Image (cartoon, rainbow, N blue to C red; front, side, top):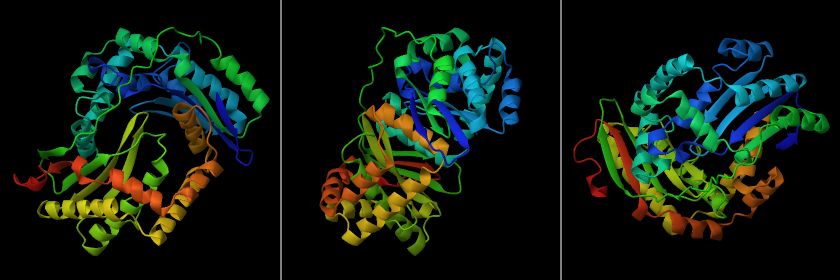
Length: 405
């Protein structure tokens, strides 16, 4: 259990994080983590799915869940006066969900619609295709939602077996942030989450680090625009270079004042949407640029992106530009941690990534310590086009991006 008291708030957020996600599935289990996340809201021994929904609405609260490539999270956000009710409700879902066969069959259709929704959203689809291209057969490259064939064929016992194998108490974090009394909270968590936590003998240390592969993948689709992803090798979530890389990402495409936004959208009008982001996992990561543009401008946009990447790799950044993005990073960080929900997320991620809490002041200090020399060295190491991977989706000409193949 990890907690942070925020006495100025009237809310509290409780999250249960399981250190298992889509990368921990076998190929024949693709989508199980996400499907289990759905099923925990479909009824328990004493509550139907409708009763669960009515109960959280009656509290004026929010209850939801999300699955990533490495974690599965269930959370409730309520007024502080409803903390015990929230803990009891979340505990009931987590420990006593019934996985009724009829509910499983209905939810299969819901998840299949979710998969189809991604197929209809080119921004989501190109990023999913890109992950599969860059990481090839590595589990991190698979879709979190799974494949239609796997979802259609899953059985109740498959889900129960997966929970038995992966939902290990040693790999589960209860994270709570907001307004509460610590002594009372300790008693409540012990009451609702302290049972059934016998240590298992099975080890979960079976993750294999990913390799990032270069190359070009083109997929034709009838769209108005071509959607592009370009990636370079990045760093793991806890890597010592992460703050310098955060800064370089901000310079490249992490904000509206970034080089790519200004060069590609503001100066040339070649794209409405263009941005870059970092993906950091427990043992690897990527730097990715996304853009959408007219078919005839694809090569021009890719050339501009590559030019900015190359410039950072060779020259680094100017001192005034670095100071500007550091100020932006600190402001964004502080604003992002104003709610009990965001603090709950940070507490759990810190525990799973580092095994300890990292304070806001410590993170701000790390940003302050990033300097021009460090950024130059990190840029030279990671901003090279030899590891570049490009995915294009849309009405592509057969010779598009030929120079990069």
